[in-house]
Image (cartoon, rainbow, N blue to C red; front, side, top):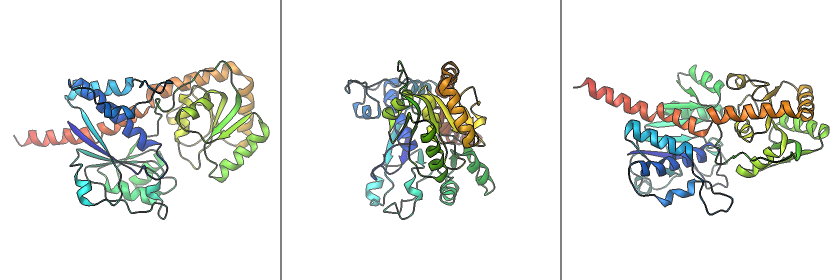
Length: 347
């Protein structure tokens, strides 16, 4: 059995994003891993599954099941996952978890905001994998964390390139979608022309949304999470996105997974994984933003064809399962391979 710890704070009023998705997916892998090994079901792990509309039946996760089966078939391994809040708990409390084969620190935002987090997080044990997300908002802190990790990963490619100049060999691990949190809903008709689900927390976002509000009055704006956000996406002809800087944000993947067409600003890395006009629609300034929004609101067949291609591409290649598998193959199992190689050389 391989033990993995996921470190992030969930007691500050927020529990969403990459840390939650990684933890929940791996907990579901643990659940199916028990079954692969002939162990009884562990009902304590069911809280990591989504529920059906009846709120009583848990949804199966084919991706987690397939990954658990792969681990068992190829390595005869199953996982045990623990969530550890990195607050300054007494050493005895931390020690109760024991040691781990891999310690995963998934960027959770507040850890890099000095003055907001009410404590100093303790040092992450080793071996450490670090998935950096918000490098566009707090690069120095993320660089410091990446330097501590044996296995650093960055959601933004520019951070990979910047860190390479600092001697950090990070891998590009973009954001993704968790389909169990953002399922696809099908509606007979679209309720909104355009929607934006998120926060207005940058000047470029304020300006773009102000322009869209004026041009397209049938516009939804608000904050929603998980299936509530997916329902809004699914009810909209166009899901609008604008990054704060040059970041490839999570909304790109979540919107496309809804099956509605994404209209988003061009950034340097987005065309490395998606094709403009095939999977999504890109704009480079506000005039082009309005022009393309108006065109695709009026051209249903073209819009829905792009939406479908985008959905298929995201579900095929850009799920949390895909990112977790890449992370483990380049950290936990890379470590195992190295240990085996050292052992073999000593015989």
